[in-house]
Amino acid sequence: MGQLIYGKNAVVEALETKRVLKVYLSSSFQETHIITLLQSMRIPVERTSEHRLQTLSKGLHQGIVAEVKAFAYITLDHLLEILKSKTHPLVVLLDEVQDPQNFGAIIRNAVGLFADAIIVKKMHQVDVTPIVAKVASGALEHMPIVQVANLSQLMETLKPLGFWFAATSLNASSIDYRRFDYRGAIGLIFGSEGHGVSPLVAKNADALIKIPLSPKLESFNVASSVAIVLSEAYRQRFPF
Image (cartoon, rainbow, N blue to C red; front, side, top):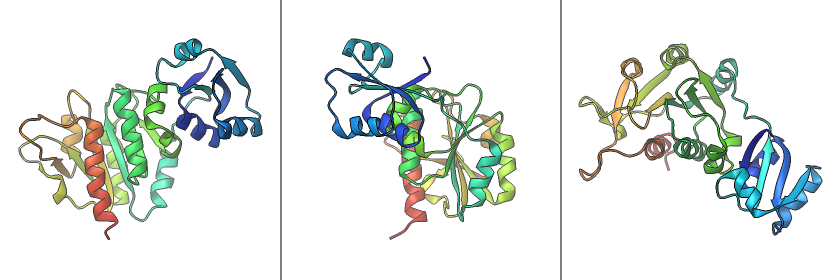
């Protein structure tokens, strides 16, 4: 059996991008628009028990699980084509994010707040798993994601295109994230849940930024940080 995704939104979005090979529905599933879509696309459907769906999904499946083609990361060349076509491109770089819930939420935040691509490391980074797809809730199908061996080298590749990079950091020299200018070609770097942005990547950034927060908290999780910083980028890039 191939890769599985589950949940109504995730499956419908995968249907629209023609990644679905087969769908498993609970015997009680009655979402007419989804059933009609499956019939019109001639997708094989198997009715099965709630117990089997739970075994297949290991999560909140909403009565539907789909076997899909493996998620296709884009190539670096494709990424460069996308970025060159944008007037003011914005990319999110993830430095070894390992929690699938965070990764899925980051993808959803990036789509909702108009990021153009996500760049991740090939090693020590959570892959696009069924949990990631479920949390992204359909957004996965709308976000180009590229894997690279080395983030610092990728940054050097993008700098000739006019990119400026800001890395989140709790370093004493970091500036308030609201003081950074997000209106050009921008790369925003977010670190792993346990260690943050690696020292070498942070050193190669043009600015270190931080989110002021209550002394009752040490930090936000990485998905929240992405949402907060991208919201400020959106405010600056798309003013009233």
